[in-house]
Length: 356
Image 1 (cartoon, helix red, strand yellow):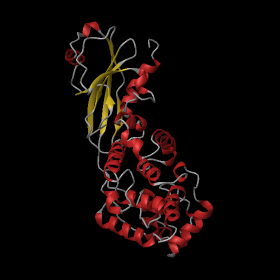
Image 2: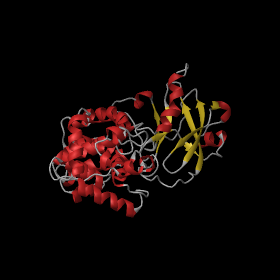
Image 3: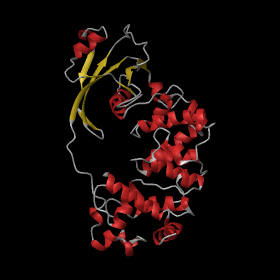
């Protein structure tokens, strides 16, 4: 065990977080769910989602047997919904190909949808007592600063350096504690903004600290302007509170989630209503304030158009991808459906409307 690992473990014994929900009743399933949820999401946000998810789906079998709508419903608001879809698909594959038991090799773990090199390493290290190696955002930050690695970590050369250091530092014993410790160090002391170098156990040998370049590392990704897209969303509602919703295709943006119908920004209200066989004169409608929703690779300008109908028309909405959704379907029950963050925002005014 090298100096880095010893220092980190000594610090963790006194200062590490040991009361996070996924640190109780540790098993491969709970570690897996937590690691997937923690990808690009803060611990404080994940805690409630993790508790609700594991209360409903206590093990791999229950997740595998679930309806994808319910899985995505419990994921609503957490973002990066492909993570939830991959969890569900992987659970089914584990039941089908591994007798419901999480595979134990790096290769078999990485073969599952949504599990990469780092997630597989975390599952092996924390839940299986193996010498698994991780590389999440916190670890990248700690290693970049400690070793003074300059260059964007997304570049293959820099990424390879990071992984080699991670491998070199990961001990053969107490690997679970080490894995949690290095994540904790990045989350609590070696933070992206306002790092607390004075209390860091690595400060005496930290290259970035010695060179006074802590705030410059890791090197950020070169900025690139995000393109802007626009769309109109038609929120059609009935007196009983039912709203017309469309399900996105299983793959792609918002895969498997439900939204109010989305159309091109040049689609007029009359044109959309004609799709439904309705006359614009027979409806009450208004356009709400445009808002922006930002994705990883682009911005979306959302123009909401609210349409109220007095009676339910004879629409051809029996297809799986289109349906009238009652308020009960938006709650946490067996009929619940997964909503995009934009859908949640668009539907919110209906819940507070005095006419509902």
